[in-house]
Length: 207
Image 1 (tube, rainbow, N blue to C red):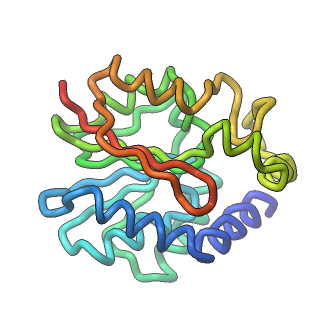
Image 2: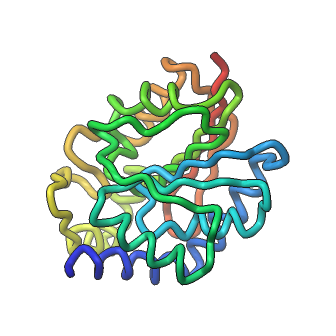
């Protein structure tokens, strides 16, 4: 029940403008003409995948998350009749995430600043595929006591939170994480600050 409440609360939060802004920014910075396969890594409610498939009739999206979470993802898929969104239950720290994705999207998930996941993400992208990651940079956390408070009110079953806001065990500062992308053939071509204090970064797979 608790995990269900968390997923639904996050969905409500996303629908208060974050979802719309993120989808708009993604559409403005990625050419979806030839994008066929999309992965929402740690995608929870799946609303980003649902929104993007509604705007792209040739897009097939997959939401990867823990099994108790994807059961709630299925609720939203059915609610919005999103027939081109599917779920992949698993633990992305341990399990295979699939392959040949045109776009991989990661937003506020536990692996979003964990360097050991970068090779897995890069390996799952097609050549010239795009990795999109959205996280709260450390400087935003330091300047926003309310954001830190919001973070500390959440707990995550079986997931160890880090000592600083929007970080988990084995996380590094977001700027350091972004610098590491190039070591795995991911070249950053755009970074934008969002209205909620988060930052969204786009990177091509160049090798």
